[in-house]
Image (cartoon, rainbow, N blue to C red; front, top):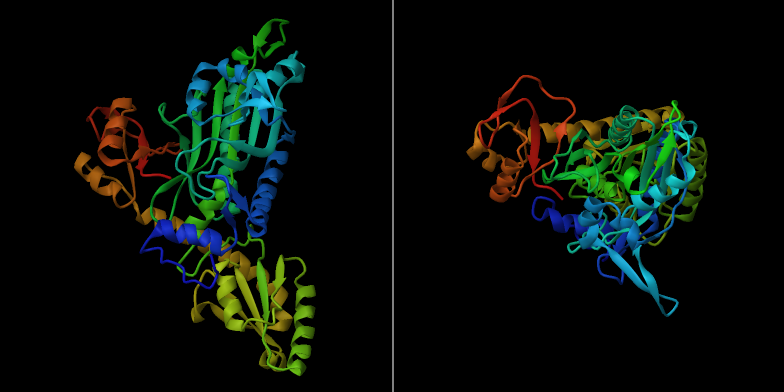
Length: 478
């Protein structure tokens, strides 16, 4: 797809806008295998910045990285009944290796609880070995029927944390701690406002006792589950016999957790912040925080301009900078190109700027002339840092305002059906799976989560009218 083709407007066809933008901005492309994607360098750099933000937080909370095999014996998945039932429709199974039929089929990992549980059973013998706090970065395969770049692909990249603890209380604390880590990253690095909360029994992870998620509202008001954290209880510990001698020299099963965030989060960034011009990337994660566009017409002007550009580049070396010195395209083309790619801040340097000792700065989050300002070259290092902070805060506030404007509290079931077409519904729910299923059948909306921060008090379930002390978000989702 050519980058010069006009981008479909979000308001006209949000889905087509998204698909075009992922390719035109060179984040990813379709692979020869149906449902798989090729992550291009620009998209991979964005993922690396996401990794860095998360990995720092993981290590600050005491976690270490390791790597586990891509292939898992089929018998491992069958040890945890609920787990295998949940994933069986999505499994990729290897039956031949080296031209020979395998004695036992191998599963290309959809997630790693089983293989990691097997290894933890070997490593953990005493309470002195606990807690085990391990994370791995890798890829997994889930045979999805309907796919979309970043949001849902057969193979995707992620991190998955797996921890083992001596008590249920420790494991539950870990589950919430990592949910809060995801929330902190989403809000402060990605500028994506999220709601952390508890998933319903129907929506929880296969094999978990309790599942939690961070939910984000996309630009079309649909919800996206952007990260999950699971309290697994002793389900996998008993399936894989992960035991330890406690303080009283008695044999106990450990309590485990798992938590993950994937390249799906790139989709969250695109759909939360993007506009009709293209991407708007948060400065903390953008592959290029600043693009410098030199403007000149003659070789003499080029020499003078590029000398100043190089000096500015060095003065701003603490930022991620791209100097666009392409000679085969016009400055206007470059402006549009980098707006499409979502670079937070553009700096224009031309002959008139050199004479005046200034540059022109253009904010990506404010499109057109209102986003431009003329700044003295001597003040540039200080002004750039402040401007990037403003952009980071601005896009978060805009996304939060959008979510609040499109979240409703319906008074009755009829209103719930009307709200579902507009955005999210925040309403009382009794917790009954039948009420949950009725909403999905009638509106196609599902429970997203029961937010950790509840309003308190009580009300009547929006479906059946029974007394309820908890509120839930209903929404259509990706």
